[in-house]
Image (tube, rainbow, N blue to C red; front, top):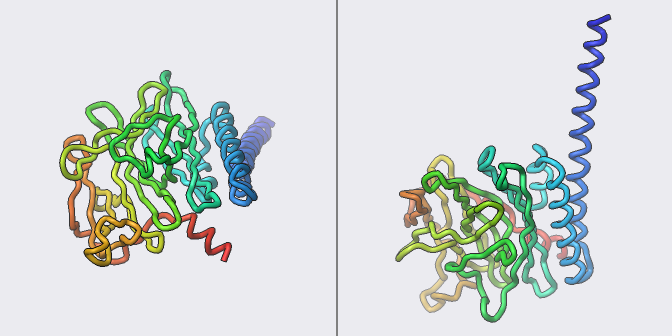
Amino acid sequence: MKQRALRLSIGLLCMLGWGTASIAQGELGAFVERYAEIQQAPSDAKRLALSDQLSSALVDHWSNHPLEDEAGEILGSVMGFASAGDGKERLTVVSWNVELNNQTNAYGAVVVFSGKKNEQAVQALRFKRSTTLRPTLDEKSRYTAKEWPGAVYYEVLLQHQGSRPVYTLLGWDGADNIRTRKVVETLSISGSKLKFGVPIISAGRGSTKRYILEYSDQVSATLQWREDLDMIVMDHLSPPSPDLEGQTAFYGPDMSYDGFVWKKNHWVLEEDVDVRDPNLQAPWNNPKRLRRRYRN
């Protein structure tokens, strides 16, 4: 009788566990559907409103639930999902783009991290759109969660400056209808405050807060973490002819590669690196290009 009771208890626990996982998958699936609604909305105003609603829904969800193990697989199938670290140093960023009618992009994102009391905290990022005073992404500026410069992040790396964790995000920015960007973004957390733009990138004279690859919308460029090389690897970009120098809308990969290596608490640029991989591919698809193929 006791053995039967034990088997029933184990069965009940398994059913409860399966039920909890099923509920989590259903809730995460609902966020995927919300994202699809954003892309299908008929106007910029509607798409932006739905994006804000998705941010609020994700914040509300993870303010009341721990981050699910299935989140990366489910949300990452359609949105940017990047996570690194464990315990109090764990950071997860869920991000997405909103393509506007003029073929520029707005962005939404939610960050899940460890707050002041080492409890799970969640915060939405508010996208700061370009203006005439800030026509392009600024390599030198710091930004808060309320004036986030925007991108879809597909990788986050955890490094340490002494005992302080610092995060490096690799992301995609759709820019406009002639240029695309990939960005090496830096992030630190102080209590509950997120700060974008940590001066830990050495790419020439002094340190910069982020590194930007800007190139023609007609080509693809690699920016990825290579575990085997312990390096951030990226295409070297150049114009097709000297007279187009500085006009990044014509830039593209020239079959050579550069990289960032972590040295003495900084990412240090190394040029013309040997990646030893003839099949190197960009790790993340351009969502703008996918949608254009769909429309055509």
